[in-house]
Image 1 (cartoon, rainbow, N blue to C red):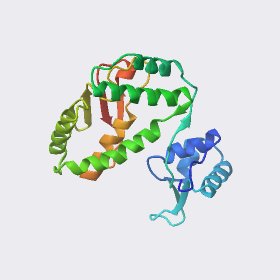
Image 2 (cartoon, rainbow, N blue to C red):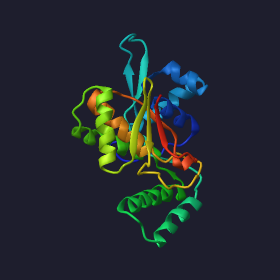
Image 3 (cartoon, rainbow, N blue to C red):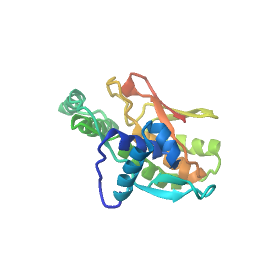
Length: 233
């Protein structure tokens, strides 16, 4: 939140924050989602409010009801440390690189796997940073409709050697990136690696088309695929 990083302890509080991540929810919806007693949820909501992690609002459709909305940012979470991927990423620096892009990609792999090795799931904050970057990148584009915008985005990706971007479908939106600058050359580690790209594309769509969307990567080099695929959910 605005005061810094707050560690959330306990599975119920984590459930509540996960539910509120995408939209506001009523008290009854939170109770149903968690499966806990109303008195238990009231205590957890009070704790989260005191830490400035969520806000309580009056439902405009029914003033007798309250809704809850996040007023904080999901930065990261703990996970079991994964060390072997980090060692593999570091080993690549013992040889020379064929291009500046290959060096950049290797640095990204080392940073991402370094967080994993420390037991930190960095994906939420990487997505947020990607969104912030995407909002600024969007200032390079002039199109105000989806098809025209992605013609410009594809050209931008190609010009700056970020990969080859193509739109497989506009409804629902499905975007494929070949030769992705984030994950090309990454080993199959059973993880999708491109949360930064998820945020980047979301930021562009939000800034240019005022689209609040949730683009999710479902295929990635880090998961054994030969391309990245992002779909609207």
